[in-house]
Length: 435
Image 1 (tube, rainbow, N blue to C red):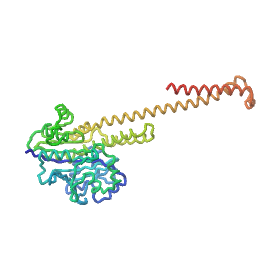
Image 2 (tube, rainbow, N blue to C red):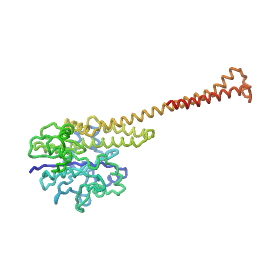
Image 3 (spheres, rainbow, N blue to C red):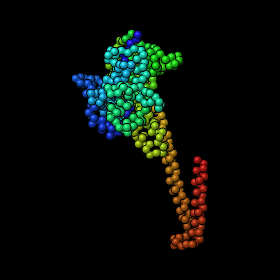
Image 4 (tube, rainbow, N blue to C red):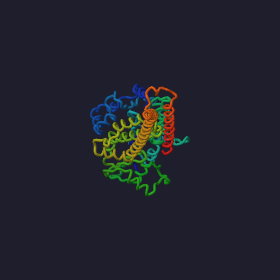
């Protein structure tokens, strides 16, 4: 029977208000992320930081706690009731190894590192692997009657990962939980998951049947989920990245799969955990923010004054997070480009640019209308005064007669003025109908 090694990473978007951030900062459960590397802190941290270019490095791996962006690691011994595990039959199919909280400017990311049960030497059978791959990322219910994946803790046999995070990990009230996760479903009902799957029986890998089934999240042995030949070809061509013969990478619908042969598996696992997941986290954050901006543009009326502040926020975000290059490593940069392409970051950026262009066009039209109204006002004012000076000149009226009323001068002047006003009013409505 085939046996597979497995490691996984879950990414949970979370919206933290200032009060929630302060609550986390004061909690003894959360410590600076560097404390996850005791004994070899300086060397490990420096190696991880070197993977990213300087601007994004300070956000993903901040060294200063007072910076706007921070990162915390969970002190697992301080979690009430212990950490949950993902059960299968009577055993522990997957356990949490560490949890980091990446606190960024607007939204934040919870990152969970998981691995297969230590008692099975981190080896899974085909059925267990497929079950884990399909069920583990479940987060929101797809419909009211949906029975999503359940986890176990020392205190309960049945909880969801989302409930455990809200109640045990953070201790949120119902209101705080709504604030944190109520508007963070950009990835649908399941969390993005990056998995490493290693097969000790292979020296080279290709997009085979196991790879395709795991990438699409198909259940084991259910032929109704079999893809047609054309779809298999499309997935293998458009959603796979491969440089070396001994491992390849797939990305489809927020399910990321590193599929490896025996040779080189250990070094790949290390690189995934230390480097590649942070390129992925950067792409996820960009996608979250860009979709957020797009939603705000749709909700905000085109003439709303908040559009100006929204546009400023977009400009600032692009300066700080939208980089054409992110990694100092060649393979790391190629993987980042692959993630960017699959998540359509360029297309979403283009949509936002079009929305900004529409808003600019409206503002320009509105500005021209205001300019036209000002010109019309001054023209009207001049038209009203013009008859007085014109008639006064024609009749050579002495200045003293300008202040005598009624007189032939004022009768003629007011008549001409009335004609001009009627003409201007007609012209105004006529031009409006022409538009």
